[in-house]
Length: 183
Image (cartoon, rainbow, N blue to C red; front, side, top):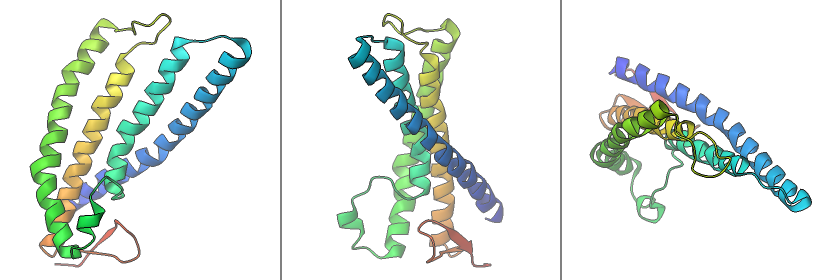
């Protein structure tokens, strides 16, 4: 279990760093969006490349931040139901649902995203819009996002299993940090 927890900590560290870094992409997307709007209104000039860059950046932020959201326990859940459960019950349900639903989904999406990305990269796919950008970087973001989410799902499964079986205990100081109990 110690080795699995060490791997989980490594995954958490990587996804934490990527999650913090990707926030700068959001700033870039906002600045590009604002700049594009100003240029379009003031100079009556429009560019498909700038519009596509905006959605590439927003999509990349969404895809790469998904694993970070899972790490920080900020993902979508039905709090009105789960908030009434004990911490032990939530941990067990998280463990079961991560194994039954999230892990197969992320593995399937990764498996499907690979040939989709690779075909686009291999042919140098370009947007069908006039002046559009190459497409494979956006598809690469989908692939990398699901790879990161798959890895974070495995990390969460290891940590939840460790909590459920008594190897870890949640610390009260941080919302999603865990600390070894020495078992």
